[in-house]
Structures are given as structure tokens and as C-alpha cells.
Length: 335
Ligand code: ISE
Image (cartoon, rainbow, N blue to C red):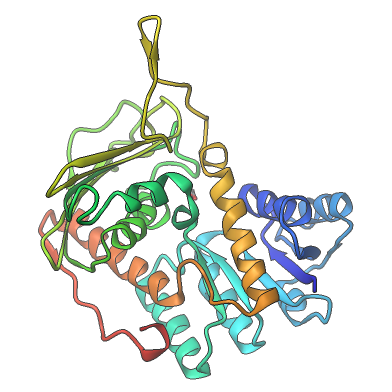
């Protein structure tokens, strides 16, 4: 069985997903592409032997498309995910589900009303071998319960210009998701500290941001989000547990030292660091669609929680105050 995938959005990540589906994932074929830049979609369509269409509605409705991958700019995800639900097409939606919580809630409500889980969220770090290895260290046989988790997420240069709220909904949303997956707990509050900024930061913005969260069971999660570090793409996560600690440095636990040198080269951006996680996520999605195995990865509920926590973090960024996080009960569809 081959899943015919239509890809909405053929920028950086959409192009990477489409090429992966066409060449590195089994059981899938890319049949249709849409981008608001028609020429861009047309070029990729020629490369992959697919068709470029002038509207995303046409792509979702097409008989040539069994499943949809949404990789458009963040603000379009919710309306496109709603259209996929209305057409009852399985969908892999890039993060975030929506930058605005109420838009994410509309998608959650629509899927709950449908009564079937059709959307998988593109929180690809859940498929990353480094994070999986880190998670495997937790528990009584390993480093014990997580007490403190320290994360750093640094981009060499802000991919879409520097906007502090966007750095929460578009970038730190990865840490919001992966830490609740890692410690298996929901957050109780968030506080964002905006301190001294790096040299490239416009006067009315802040970068880095220091995001502090506490989970319901008390685990402290801290995130340094620095979108203009100028160094390279770095994602690290260090867990202090009750019985020991474990550190994931750019996907490796052990940094080798030789000839008075320690460390390793950094990729310029996330497609290098998370290439395998993106591929494993796509393969997991396609295998789920071809075999009927349970949906792996993040759900619409996870997407909604991400947007809600990000919105509380933006509130805290503006006030400097700690903001409580209250979630509605989890719908039975996701429990
Ligand atoms: C981008 O959309 C990603 O998902 C990257 O992982 C993140 O580091 C980057 O800041 C985002 O813009």
C-alpha cells in the first residue's frame, strides 16, 4: 500500500519533508504540492514527479491525495488543519498547531467532535534518538525521577527575524512539548525572564529569553531560548535526577576529547541536527497509515497544550510575573 501525500508549503521544511517522503521513507509518494509561491511549488513538483496546484483547498480535496502534510507558515496551520478534518484526511501538521491558543482549541474541538484522531503533530524531537536515549535514563534503574531539567535552544541567526513572542510560539514550543514528554507531567506555571540581550537584538525585543516552568509534581524545567546566538544550531538537555544525572549534548551523551580538543562541530541549522528525527517521524506516520498501528508522536491534544503554554509564557514575557497554567480535562479521545 502506498500513501499518496499532498504537501502544503514548500519552503525549507516542506521541501525537506517532501524529498524525504519521496526518497527516504517507504510506503509513501508525494503526488501534489501547494505553496503561495506557485513557481516554488512548481519547481519541486517537477523534481518529484508531482503536480503543483494553485490552492491548498484543491490539494486537500483531490482524489490523488490520501494524506496531507502541513508545512506552511505557523499562522495558517489551524485553518488548514480544520480543512483536513472536514475532508477527513489524515494529516501531519508541523508545529505549532497554532500561535494563538483559541485557534488551536478550535482544531482540538473539531477533532473531538469528529471522534477520530486524524492529526499527528510534527514535534519531531519525540523521534530523536538523543532524546529517546535521555528519556531511557530516567526511573529507578537509571538516574531516578527528574528533579531539574536544563535546556538550551540556540539558533545561529533568527530564521524569520527577531520577535520575542515568535521565538516562544515557533521555537521554544519544542522545549514546551519535549519536556512534558520527557518528564511525563503537565506544567503548573511558567515565568519568562527577559534580561540583557545579545548584540543583534532590536531595542524593543529580548533575546535570549529565560523560560522557567514547574510541573505539577514539582520538576523544575528551565529553557534558555537564544535565536541569534551567532554560534550555530545547538540543542542541549541536561537532567538532574534523584539518583544521578544525564546530559544530551547535540544528540550525544559523550563528548570525546582528543589532542587537547574537546567538542564537536555544530550544524548551521536544525535540518542537520534533527534530520534523522524528521525522517523517523515521517516513517512512523506513514507506517501508522499503511498498517493501522497506533498513531506515534504528538497528538492534537499535545499541539493544543503547546499553544496554551506558549500563550501563558508570552503573557509572562509581557508582565514579568509567574503565570499559572490550567488545562481543561483531557478529552477521552487522547487519554
Ligand atoms: C524552526 O521552525 C524549528 O522548528 C527549529 O527547530 C527551531 O530551532 C527554529 O528556531 C524554528 O524557527
